[in-house]
Length: 249
Image (cartoon, rainbow, N blue to C red):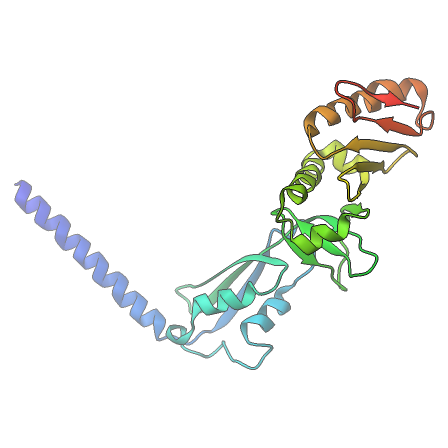
């Protein structure tokens, strides 16, 4: 009884495999009828569009995709071409049963813009990648300035100092209140950081990019307890360098 049941299961599996192989063979001999492109992870950032992706896939229009047999299309090569665009983090290209080519392009998301006096500005992405600025779209993100800012771009965020600054920027980005409140992060060559808020004229001396949570916890006390009583423009300087202290003047 068990032997018969096992034989039936094996036959069913073989039949299913044969059917899948048959369908795949027929699909592969179909010409590509349509290319459906979707830009993922836009987050209201519009650095690339569907036409940009199509031009990357077709080598700026020199190569045809629609009408070519699906079996003759190198999907991995198409993904590689799409991913040459710095604004695209990852691409998935696959075919469906109707002969369509489905393209998913996952867009990089910038979280800061690095200001450079002697070179073009650049963005920092959520993954710590350096992205070029775009003539098409300007992202509303935290600004990074100061004498050390160009080194972030030059180093491609590869050393420990750069990673510390990135963690600070990432912390601001991930907190809704600080993302709305902090407009600019100024970083000097000695590693000293100054924060500039969106509202108010304070300069916030942050010190080195370390003990980030503790410093922001103290800064939160300043915004939620001190400023409502003293007023937004009563203090010009806020110092968070000293452990467990907020020095205001």
